[in-house]
Image (cartoon, rainbow, N blue to C red; front, side, top):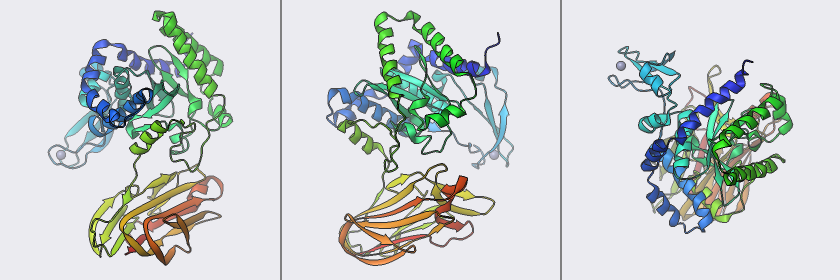
Amino acid sequence: MEKHPFLRELDAIHEVCLRYEDEETRAIAASLVPTETLKARVAAKDPSPDVAKDLLLVELIQWFKDEFFSWHDQPLCETCKVQTHHQGLTPPSREEMRYLAERVESYFCAKCRKSYRFPRYNCPRKLMETRVGRCGEWANVFTLFCLALDFDARYIYDVTDHVWTEVWSEAQGRWLHCDACEAEIDKPLMYEVGWGKKLKYILAFSSCETADVTWRYVTDFEKTMKLRTAIDETDLIHYQEVRTRRYQEKLSKEEKDKIARRRVMELTEFLTPPKYNAQDKSYGGRVSGDLDWRLARNETSEKTVISNKNPDVKELQLTYVSSKDEYTLRENGREISRTTGWTRMLETCINVSRKVEKDWKMAYLARSPNTEYGLFRYQFKVTKPCRSIEIYLKTDVFENGKAVVNVIADGTTICVRNNELTGSLDNSKDIVVACEMTGGKGDCAWQHAQAFRQALDDDATVLKIILRF
Ligand SMILES: [Zn+2]
């Protein structure tokens, strides 16, 4: 009988994981990781021994993203130094096939007509040399590095086109979600809640098991079940059983028992849907109670705090232009920095995305689709007591959408009505400006509360925060 195409797809994914079993490959991986440096960083936090291993994972993922692997964008032409154009796929060469590149992306330079190839290698050894790619390549090598550092790791395949890693935490007795591209650990709901993905099947692969782990990543089991139409559920279970049994033939009884015990713990975890707390930036669902671990996590999350550079500051001003997606920071009227990227000055951002409508020629911030609550905040920590504040934060609402702007000065909340506020402050040094977006109707509810809506050919200021000292 012909094998179900869905299962053939899973077989192909598993081929990648088998390459991790090669001892030479693991040895190369281990030699590339600056393990001693990472361990020293962990030791500096003085953690308890069982938590140290989890903290090493935090250091590993950060190092991997910051220093080892790069994201593949459209390449620049070597001669003309201009952006090349994507031309679609081209067949792999023999050499490229040797390193398991089934697809090769092709780019060309419009100026000199030179063409460039980007083979999507699947061979982890080759990828340790190229060190570039998108989520497939990132997860592939990161999973290998985890294994090389003696973590129990699995390669996670989401059929809606994403891959990542899971690592077993001895300290917490559960599998931790790890997304190397984002350097995120233990944020399993980031895809569904954060990115608005409609997840269906998520499977874990290792050299000793194939396991359906969808239920760690979705909040509504019933809704997810309805989306699972690719294959009969019994066939999928059977597939996991057969494969797992086959991989485990080479294992000792102790090893088999260990894996079985973990699986039971995991299935128990799956009995209740993970809870999503709108206030929790982590999308963590079940967050561990371990304080060391949580502290470590906070340290790795990006968090911009705006402060004054000049001790003689009399006025600090932050402005944003939506059409250019650009912030400007000024002290005493003089520009001190310009920053592109709307998230770059934020202290907190939950379920908010920037949307550019090409047809309407508009740019704005709104909730990510399929979310009910969105929040972004700016935080100022200044060395001089602040006497007054002036704010303009443009919001637009449609239907029953709501956008609420508040200032929190040393813990006291001041409501900003009609997008504008000029008021005195009680010598505050810690000032937060927050915008919350809720409400809206129908499928486009997320769009019904917007911040910074602006035409793309307009360069007026849509955000202005002035602190006076
Ligand atoms: Zn060129």
